[in-house]
Image 1 (cartoon, helix red, strand yellow):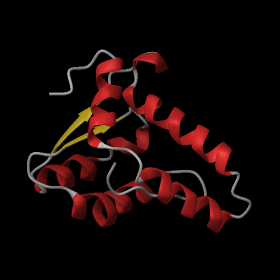
Image 2 (cartoon, helix red, strand yellow):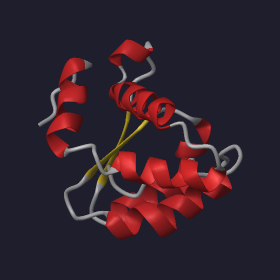
Image 3 (tube, one colour):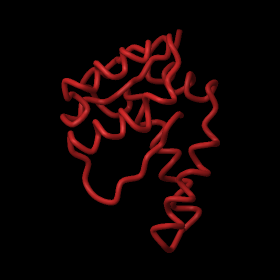
Length: 121
């Protein structure tokens, strides 16, 4: 995982575009693939343009049940580790999320895609 972000409140298209521009795009390399679910805030006109300007491509997951969604598999692990850590403050929660994000390896993420029936290559 690259460029994790925690937001204290709901996501909207303005906040998501700021994340893409300031957090995600600086981490992208030409040839990278960004996979997103179909949340409305992910579909702003500037999102695709910013990602593609960095030389990366953007793929939206097809609308389907969670068991076929590779992103949901990663969030399942994240949520389980958050419950186990039991951070008691907002700052503790944010720090814990940062540490957990570092545990996701490229091979593990490829396995999430494979388990959801997607070809990771």
